[in-house]
Amino acid sequence: MIDHVMTSRVVSATEFKAKCLGLIEEVETTGGTITVTRRGRPVVVVRRVPKGDFKSPMGILAGKVKIAGDIVNTPRLWDGFGRG
Image (cartoon, rainbow, N blue to C red; front, side, top):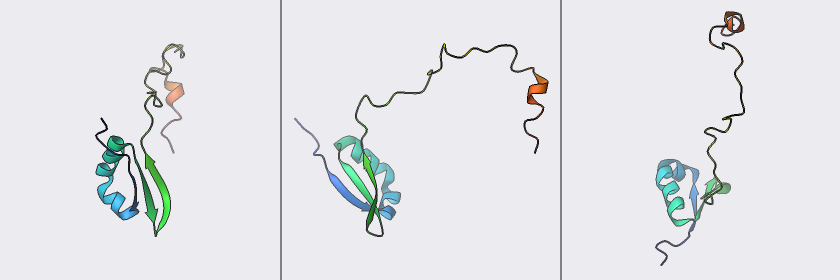
């Protein structure tokens, strides 16, 4: 049984700004889209990302980077940073 019906709404940028979190939750729940307009012209469409499309970048370089030497106690390496 489907609890929610997919919706397509149009809101102004001002309304989107005021109700952003609620509108995002609505899109996540219903799977619909929200078109945000500025001065009556569409500028952005907010939609739910299909499941499986997001992959966290956490640990993406695990096993691919090798630290050679002492990167903390290398004074000459850090001498040029932070001076403007």
